[in-house]
Amino acid sequence: MSPVLLLVDVQRNMLQPPEPVPEAETVSAAIDTLLKRARATGIPVIFVRNNGGEGDPDAPGTPGWELVHEVLPGEHVIDKHSPSAFAGTGLAWLLPPTASVVVAGMQSEWCVRETSLAAVEHGHSVTLVRGAHATYDGDEPAAVISGKVEAELTAAGVRVATPSELF
Image (cartoon, rainbow, N blue to C red; front, side, top):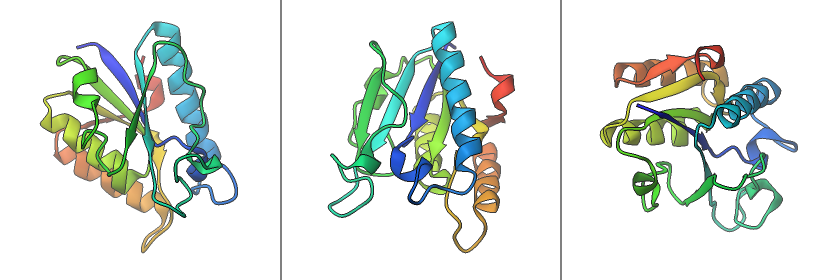
């Protein structure tokens, strides 16, 4: 299975001021490394962009909605309106049926989780990149939430790997 890098909601509103996720610098560096490696080795890259509602920090056309990384020719952007990047989008048609999906991005317990589970349901081998996904502090610290998501996804058949284990 040839891999595809799926960058979920790697948008300015969560990784840059005024309110980045905890560990935004570390997560951003890991995502940047993944993206550079994927591009250097010819691995396809698909960006997923959340389209928030009016007044949301990621409402279309606002600075927070913008992707952190430039989209290069041949790369795709999928705009979504729900946590799963497969719901109401053309992502399922864009991914080759035999592609393995490498997932990184925001937010661990929402869009990363739902998109990863949907990819498994579509028959893809899925790898979640440890240290390249994050969320905000909630009832528990962000790192605990992300760790619980990794455990849940592992139980669902998702492989969890570090950036150094990929590409």
